[in-house]
Length: 86
Image (cartoon, rainbow, N blue to C red; front, side):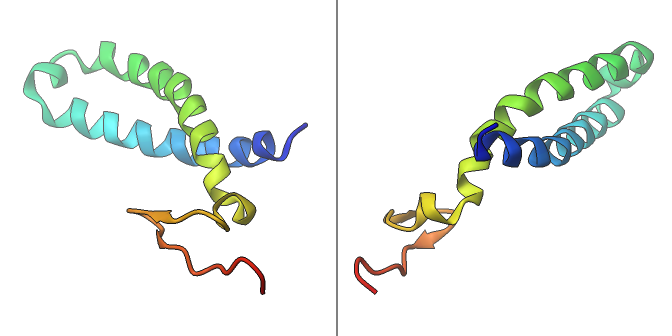
């Protein structure tokens, strides 16, 4: 079992919860969807379980320090402060 898979499995449930929360807010605040909430909520549960897996897989490498050590950085993590030879 790879480290990426282990990290992704830990991140999966958090990602699932966030996606489910966003979906529920959308279902409950949009009048057209809230009228048929009994049909949309189970669909949101299934969709959040399915969509959370690839998102967790993409997030997992970012949580490893080695992965970002020699990069230039990005919008989220900012510029790299690592040196080539310590």
